[in-house]
Structures are given as structure tokens and as C-alpha cells.
Length: 92
Image 1 (cartoon, rainbow, N blue to C red):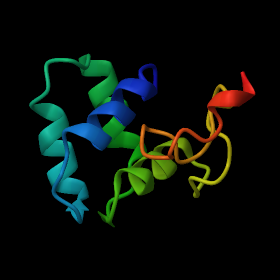
Image 2: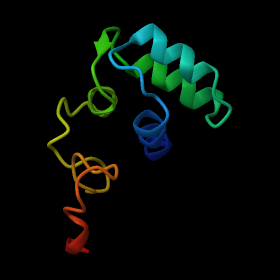
Image 3: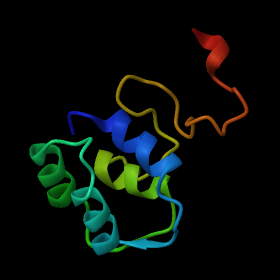
Image 4: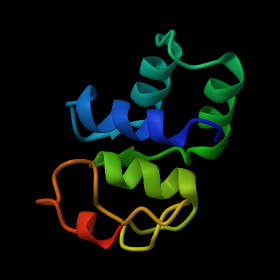
């Protein structure tokens, strides 16, 4: 996806109802004006149709890594997102 950081930010800060089904996530995605039609289509096409228990599960499914423990694109550390107690920040 072109705007994976925006997807991550949205899921971790705005989507608070977990577990969430594919259908619920797609409906929410379609209602957002922050994302282009192309990004919305890619989200729908890439996301497997199942129930997700967290934002990290959704992001792993979209990234294809299957786990939040691997380094995502750009090598910015797995669980980040402001809840990791600052770990990894001193490595820059």
C-alpha cells in the first residue's frame, strides 16, 4: 500500500472495537476521506476475509509478514506505534 503508515496510525488510534471482521474494517475504510480510492481498493484486495483481534494482526496480514515481530518496510521495528515504551528509539 502506498500509505501504510497512515493505515497503521488509523488502526491503532481510531479503530477501537476489537475483534473486527473483514467486513467491518472494509466498511470503515470506505467511509474515510483520508485515503484514495486506489488505497481503499488495495486494502480490500489484500486483506484476507477473517476476524482480526488487533491492529497488529491487520497490519501483518497487509504486509504479508504474518507477524509483527519482523521489521516492517523501512525497518522501523515491529510493535512500535507509541505503545512500546520507547524501545528502539535510541538506535537512530
